[in-house]
Amino acid sequence: MVQPVGTISKAEAVKQQSRQLRGHLARDLADTATPFDGEGYSLLKFHGIYQGYDRDSATELKQAGNSKHYQFMVRVRIPGGRLTADQYLALDHIGDAYANGSLRVTTRQSIQFHGIVKSGLKAAMGEINARLMTTLAACGDVVRTVTTVPAPIRDAVHDRLEADARLLSTELLPRSSAYREIWVDGEPWSEDQGAADAPDLLYGDRYLPRKFKIGLAVPEDNTIDVLTNDLGIVALWEAGEIVGYNFFLGGGHGATHNKPETYPRMGTAVAFIEPSDLVEATKAVVRLHRDWGDRGNRRHARLKYVIAERGEEWARERLSEDLGKTLEPCRTMAKFQVPDHLGWHEQGDGKLYLGLPISSGRIIDDDRSKLRTALHEIVAEFGVDPILMSSQDIILSEIDPSDRDTIEARLRAYGIRFGADMAPAQRWALACPALPTCGLALTEAERVSDLLVAEIVERMARCGVEQERVSIRITGCPNGCARPYSGDIGIVGRIPGFYSIYVGGDFEGTRLNEVVAERIRLGEVADVLEPLFGVYAKQREADEGFGDFCHRVGIPALRQVLLEARGKARDAAD
Image (cartoon, rainbow, N blue to C red; front, side, top):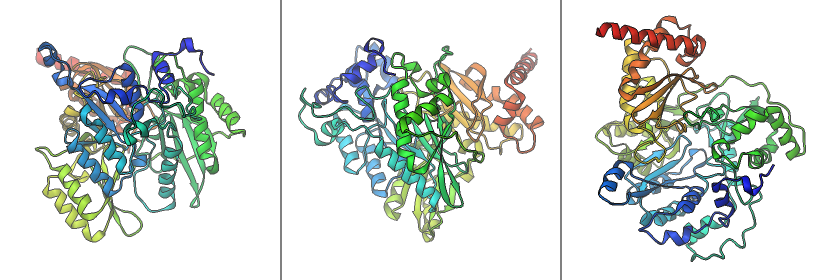
């Protein structure tokens, strides 16, 4: 289904007329004093770049009659979060040379830089590519970074997952030569560029209606929240052999406040795929989104709306037609588990790996610890290979057991906390960047996350449940970059300074939560949650998680608990 030109959005026209993602980017890159225009802003995303501005200084600059402080976020495409030691050190250098002195681990196992100015943009991109990395398709209406299980366990299961993630990432890259022309080779700008590029066989000349995310997992390890992807792939194994993949379609977290036609959705079971069909079946799902996604309304353009409105059986029939073979429904599989990869673990080959928590994914030296310095020294001295986690944490792999004590002592000397030093709610918390770098943020997330989670843990302790494993996800807007709608607790920016609180998802990542309170001030979020922890402590069943309890009791009953708690608070104040 291809919509007529008259019904496509402005963003669709920009893509179609871009000469395979070139636009005028090369020309406008040379003018370092002027931000890219609207067309350039849209096309930069396909190259892994977002243009924004410092929102902290914007009002003051405007009042003084000055322009905004424009800057760029650059995101690296890192399949499965796997980096070599040399690649990590190169990224660390870029953080100082061109960005704001930090690296940020994303919820999709990538690194992104903030604060890059236009005059340094091309040089930063060049250094990334010189280390055999790319930012191409880390953003934009294409298949983005492919995620997978982070554990570097040396067995057939984990080797296959890593190999599949790399394979899919390569196969699904856009084929335009625009990226190399602009950022790598630096060819002189010309309107004739792109004439030799044939339309991309997978993406066409308008690419996808919206972004497309893929994750690969196994039932034994759903640390990546596989069902939140447009395509969630779950590998099934029997007796040490892979038997195929269950394809779950239509996950996605983005929504818009006060627009019920937009909503988060978990991926649902569509088809079982034979091992030899993985690549072609994945491309078939991408084509399904390409041909049936809504190109007239970007808020309704994700694959999740296609699946929700047309159904899983319809999707399986379309995929069967595309592949020329009848696909089976998904096969029965074990329940999802979420293992803890923080701390020391054996790789299975005589080496060790160490998972380290990173607050909101921000690798930086501050007054609490010298995390960035410590990681740089350990990666450089011991040659360990970092692996980025979708929990915004980092794994140091390939550690010789004889170096364990030295590495741990070095980290502690720099003030680095280990997972065992933290309450479970702290070690499993996520937060998006939000202010001041995100143009969509309604309120704070990363900059308040540590204090907010500490306040929540303190309220949990009052109720005697502080050692329970609870996932808290904080976002500055409803677009859901920190996956707030699928954890035990979601805290979502509602309006400046106020949040909506969601509960009732599950820790294993199979169920959405629901809103239990709205327009709550930042300083009152922990207080609102405390009565819920109280009834959880008294009424939970054996081994029942907080999200599972909230789901069982039901949102209406929990709202009544909060109403009664507010009434008691008013009575006490009178």
